[in-house]
Image (cartoon, rainbow, N blue to C red; front, top):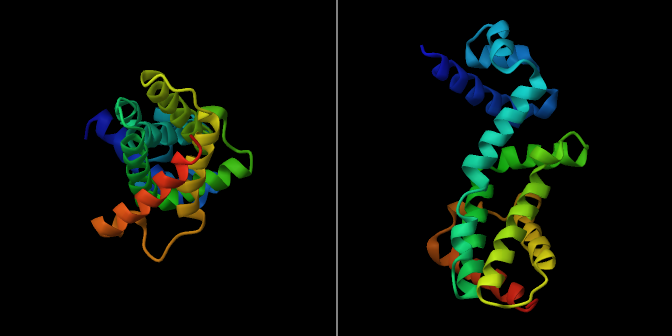
Length: 188
């Protein structure tokens, strides 16, 4: 097995264990899940905190930080809002246990700004909103809209519906997204 494969194996195990236990997880549990010696884990990541940071950054980059700037290129604000809402709700609902753990760790004050999930989501949304509204030459309170969007997204984790968003049929998704888009356009 290559060094890259071992690192990937450790990262996958760490996601699973951290998702279930947060920062309370032990390196022994992660090493056991990854089927590696604990010394191998430390050789690759130096500390549990470093491993946690690497895992969260990796997940955030792969899952949460893609596409927003592409969506911002939309000329129609309603289409932009709709794409952002649909995309984020799919990702957040598919990763609900991890998102819950990140929210919990954030509320406990255990996350640095670098990996503080709610702050990162807010910052990325604000940047995309700033880009979108500057392209269409419209003055908007993007901080307010960003906060409303974060509220929509987090409400699907904290107050889940009967079905996770990603499990809804296309028509139900469209109805829900349209309602959220209408609520946001009122803020313009």
